Image (cartoon, rainbow, N blue to C red):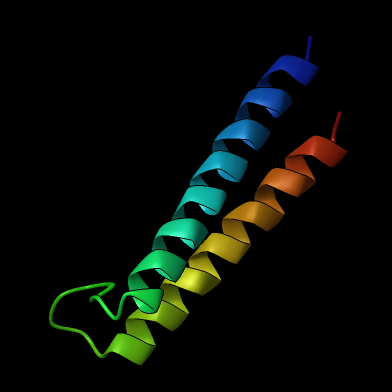
Length: 65
C-alpha cells in the first residue's frame, strides 16, 4: 500500500524536474530570458539547480519502493 504514494510522488518530481530542465535548456539555447528582470546567468543556474534537485528527489522516491 505504501508504494502507491511513492510512485506518484516520484513521477511528479521526475516529470517536473525533466520538464524544467528541458525548458531551461531551450530558453538558454534560443537566448531567451529564463526569468524576466533577473540576470540571465543567475536565473538559468537557479532553474537548473532546481531541476536537478527535483530529479534527485524523484529518484529518491523510487528507491523507497
